[in-house]
Length: 269
Picture 1 (cartoon, rainbow, N blue to C red):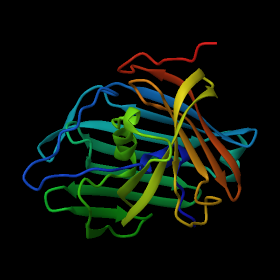
Picture 2: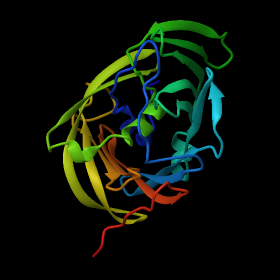
Picture 3: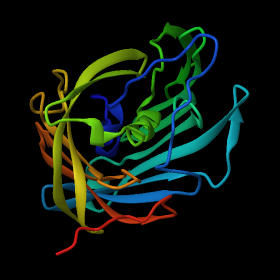
C-alpha cells in the first residue's frame, strides 16, 4: 500500500538549523503556545473528503528532561470517502519549547486495512533516532538511525516553520530542508514566493507563499506540486495548502481556530 501523508502535514517538511553537542539551541518563538487549536477541511476536487485538527495541549510535558509542547494532528475521512478509504490517523510530537525540535514522536495509522503504530525517541546530542514500530499483530521492531543536527519530524517541523522570519527573505530564496520520517532521512529545498491574499473558509487572509521542491514520488505530480500559504502575521499559521496529485487536486482549507497567541490579521477590502 502506498504511504499516505495527510496534506496538512506536507508543509511541515520545511526545516533548517544547527544544534550544539554541548547544549540545545534556543529559538525565539512569538507565534504559538499551549492550547492552540486549528481546524481544516480537506477537499478533493469539489468534494469535502476529510477533516484535520492540529492542536497543542493546554499544559507542557517533560520528555528527556526537557519541557515540551505536546502537539497532536488528527485526520479522518468523512462522507462517501469513508466508504472508499477509511482513514483515522493520529500524529503526535513532543516539541522542545526552546529548540523547537522533537524529543519524541508518535504515529498511529489506520488507513483501510492498513495498521501501523510507531514511536521515535530523538537523542539530539548523539544525533540518533530510536524507532519502535508495530504493524497489526506483528512483533515490535526496534531500530536506531543516525540523523542530522536539529532534525525534525513531520509535526515538529510544522511548528518550526512558524518561527522563521520571512521579512528577511527575498522572492526566490530557498531553504534547505532536513528531516526524519518513516525511518528515512530526507532533504529538500523550499522556495519563498512572496506574499498574496488567499480566500479561506475563515475569511480572506494575507499570506506568505512557500513552494517545497518535492522529490520524485508516486503521490505528487511534479516537483512544484505543493503550495503552502501561512498567515502573514505573528502567528504564521497555515491557512491554505494546494497539492497537485496524480489522482487529482487537493486543497486543505482553514475553517476554524482558537487560542492563537496573537490576533489573526484578515485582509481588508
